[in-house]
Amino acid sequence: MTSVLNSSTSALLAFQRALSTVSHNVANINTVGYSRQSTEFAAATPDKVGAHYIGSGTRINDIRRVADQLAITRLIDSNAEVAHLQTLSGLADRVDSLLSDRSTNLEGRWSAFFDAVSGLSSDAASTAQRQNTLDEAQALAGRFSRLNGQMDALNQEVNNGLIAAASEINRLSGEIAQLNRQIGSNPAKAAPDLLDRRDALASQLVSYTGGSVNLQDGGVMNVFAAGGTALVVGTTASRVQAVPDAFQPERLQLALTTTNLSVDLSNTALGGSVGGLLDFRRDVLDPAQAELGRIALGLTQSFNAQQAAGVDQYGERGQDLFSLGSPQALASLRNTGSASVQISGIDLAKLDGNNLKLSFNGSNWQATKAANGEPVAMTGSGTAADPFVVNGMQVVIAGGAAASNDAFLLKPSAGLGGSLQVAISDPARLAAASPVLASASLANTGSGRVGALRVTDSSHPDLGTPANIIFTSSSQYTLDGAGPYPFTPGSTISANGWQITVDGAPNAGDSFQLGPTGAGSSDNGNANLLAAVEDLRLFSAGTQSLTDVMAGLTTRVGSAARGAEYSLQAATVLQQQAQGARDSISGVNLDEEAAQMLKLQQAYQAASQMVATADNMFQTILGAVSR
Image (cartoon, rainbow, N blue to C red):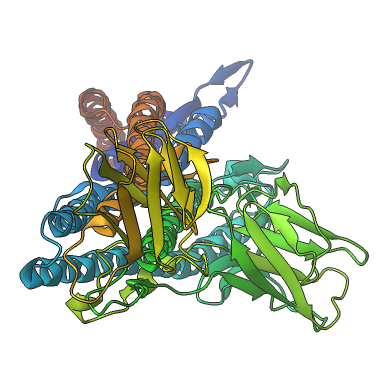
């Protein structure tokens, strides 16, 4: 009778605990990272009666966490990749919208400005047309400034994201280290819920930094960021901090900090959302801002040069229409020498806009791309007489002595778009007229007429000196008494920084005069050339115009945004597959739990009947003895 009671009582307790486990599973069906738990029954140690053994019921041998570490690791990796691409895609889309939306892009204001300049070439004397051109120049400069400001704001968002990420990384690392301490060296004896919690925290941590999760012998979890930086080793958690960039303190980077050491993580291949922030800044934001500045630099140099080649309504040579800031050479905060660096000149045809790092190894200077460390060819000695020439820049070591490992960041165009301004306010200062005008004598008898007049050297000291062309025959002419020179209709005649074509057939004695343009001229010769500035092939060794580079900027950012989006779509599919694989092993299935609950409920009821039977047996014996 005792064995019957013991067996049924042990069954009641075992089934009760099994039902509690099923209830725990159902209660956590929506808990992220929860792994289904199952009870393992084992027969209790039997009692020996005589030569035989009589069973003594059942017991719970283990409450097991149903999990596959390979599936969990695969899910952690896919979560990190999705977090990386979500961050990159979302921010790249915002830059793409800035450059492609009609209300914010550059193309609309650009076209309006050059349309106004074309209108000026049609009516060079119109005050209204001149004012419209000046207004459109202001609007274009304002668009450059706003775009650059929006990009600066995105950079600040990256900073804020790094600060928030550093706080979360430290919190998660600390909690994982604490759980390693609680779980100890025997995870088989640890609470399954603690193991789930540790895996969930590790997944969140790797979603920030990328990397890997490793379980040591004994079950202690170590977490490494992408690039191999240890974030958690056993019960020790590293500390990450957002620190100022060595060259640009307004930009933050992540660094691993200890009591006496700070290790910059910006050069490691960080993944996760932090990697997305850094990749966006390096591969999308920085190149876009540099290209915006390169366009502003090309516009300023080319338009101002053409302005200087013309004459305004006061009869004076044209002043700069645009003003622009200077390229920057930034010293590292870690420099110990006294040398300074200046960018003394820019060759647009060779300038690609990339930021460069100029470093001194104790004996020689070297140039590398700031984004990836790729070496860049450099010539010259760095003196004012023989400057370094690298990527279209002339660089001078201005003064002082450099110490070993000193470095400078060269920014030829980044940020210049925000400094573009209109330098004149008087519409009459627009230099629409050519500095030299040509006219035919009223006494001419031939059919010769002035064709194209072009200034070839606006800085020539004798450009405005009057000149007289006299034809001695239909095939010869003299220039200010010199000559004669051969002539064919349509050929050019050049002197003093100008060239002219004479069409038709002049007769002997016909003459043409050239002289400086006076005040109030309605000539549009230079306005025509100003309108053509956008099509000048200034970049990439004379193969690309300002319009080409501007279209290329929009295309490049759009391509980066679409590429990130497509990669995100692919990574999301892989994440869903990994989630499905993990859930097929560890997920809670209500149908299975309901079936298990019904089975255990029936078993519990049967065990209850066994207890009742044992009680009846006991009562029967008591009744028999009491008679």
